[in-house]
Amino acid sequence: MQSDQLSYIPILIQFLLAAGFVVGTIIVSGKLGPKRKSEIKDKNFECGVESIGNARIPFSVKYFLVAILFVLFDVEVIFLYPWAINFKELGMEGMVKMVIFMLLLLVGFFYIIKKKALEWE
Image 1 (tube, rainbow, N blue to C red):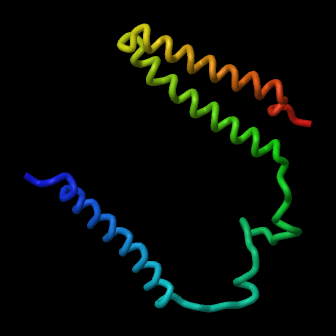
Image 2 (cartoon, one colour):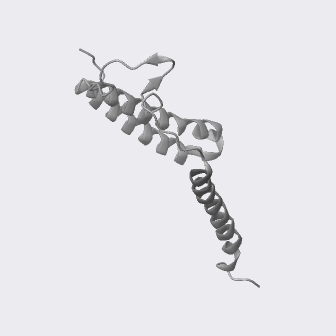
Image 3 (cartoon, rainbow, N blue to C red):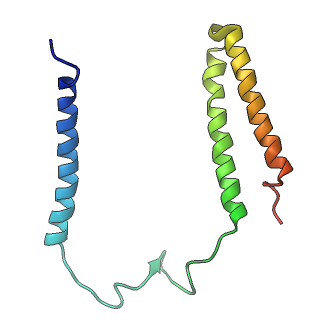
């Protein structure tokens, strides 16, 4: 009978082979690939249009806040699907846990509304 640690050796070997292949491919392509530098080649280029102005325009923090809140509430909704599928099997204990979960979600939502995090000026 094998120990639990020995059963992980094939996974370790596969990981090392994959990492070695990636590193080896990058090194070989860097050594064998063409190396031509010119002013035109090093120029910024996007979608066939010449770059004009500075690309580092500051974004509003509100944009990132709305994006993070969307991801947060979107992930929270993902937890509702397995609960809805297994509603009958979970019984009253599952119902109580989901009510607590939804109450915490609503508290967070009302906090966001109170702080006016979703309002744009």
